[in-house]
Length: 254
Image (cartoon, rainbow, N blue to C red; front, side):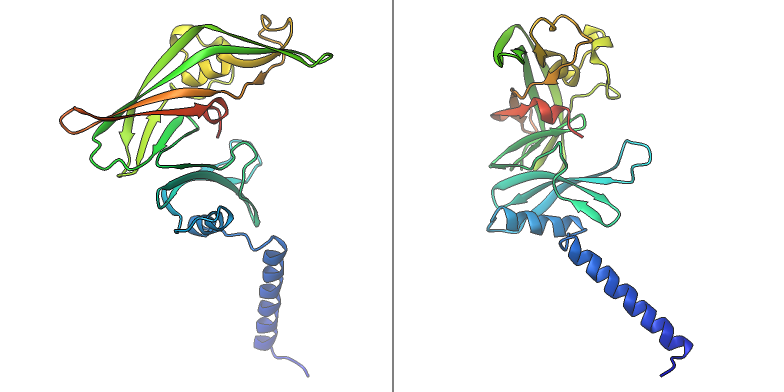
């Protein structure tokens, strides 16, 4: 049977739709919206209540010829807060970006990304807040031949006081980066170093004997920095204080 022009167009459109459906199935039926991703995360973590987003940040890749888009989400399910990031590149979709693992906490969540410290929780009645983040110089020296590790701490410490910005009733944001990201914090004068610079310079893993050589290869040490948060009411009186932590890797994530 010969098809007329309209029938051929309809047939071709149907074939295209079937091919798209097959490709979508082969990719594992990935969700492409924030709410769809929240539903997937709620199922993965067996959350009893729907996961509702309270903050969404969308970014393009920083790299040339990279068309990936990154979406960072802070969301709440009941008293549980969770943060996660996913990457989209055309039809491909990765729920867990390689540098940012999902983080979850009951009551209050403290995390960081791209120069901003995020604290999520029930902050109704809070007018302003400050966060004090303390860094302690901590180096790990290791010998790859013997696998010996030696931790060298202090005595240097530095506390950064950050002013909070309230975003809605469940989110506080504290900016800890001065200006643009510093690719080489060693070149930044000490008086101008921000929390991101110090957490990079003070938490490192070196081969033994190379810690004084700033050009030597090194790794970033996983460490929890204490975060002391003070919550204030409209009159300026202290409503509450929170003692939380943030990981060095979170302070450098994007």
